[in-house]
Length: 326
Image (cartoon, rainbow, N blue to C red):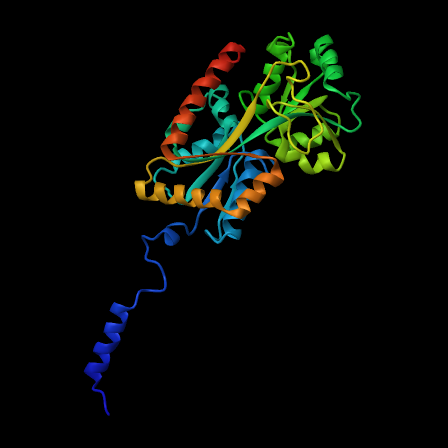
């Protein structure tokens, strides 16, 4: 039986209209997640860098997105990257890995941009800092380090993977105050991320370092670094070191990290990004990453994370003023 060209054309058109497309439309979640880039506002090897690259790998391993690019834009304690993000108003293809360090750096670097100018997406983790020395250090416990530090604070430099106002700066300043040292007497040497700090700790260029556990886990396990204390209220599983409070230093301090987007993105784009991070949070790949890195799950999204950021901003300002640093 011969089918007329007109009937054949009508049948083909009907097939196109009735059968759902195999590819999502431009407004779909999958299309909206293509071409994502994650800005890391410090050097490779630092906490923001490790968190971003770990999250992106878990996203891709879980099939939530693909081809996500991570790039570094260090400078001024994260505020160079923050300025770039804020200037990318309306760009829903850009995210930034950030945390407590950026909150403090806004004050100490007198940044014209602040986290209040960004779109909060999700808080991901909390992580204690560690007080760490090289395996060849003369300090074998925190008591010995504190005694030398109090006797001559200028001769016992402490390195941190953040600029003044960041977590690796605030933690030793709070330690100093707790043991009776004036913060202005502390010889603090800032590095742009834990990766840069590591070489100075291993080389003995600073007497001790303060940074996140996740950045140094491999060197600790290999015996290259010795942990004298952890800054959190509880010990870290798998790390043979007491808390500061157990060692007689009344400090309980925890860092955190999360993700923000530029200002001015649509509600639809924001919700799509929140869903991506929520799906990441629920994935087995991310749960495995939390365990491997010793991170504490601290997931918050959207407005809840925004309220947390506002509270942290006020808290850090108060601490810096109390320490005479703001």
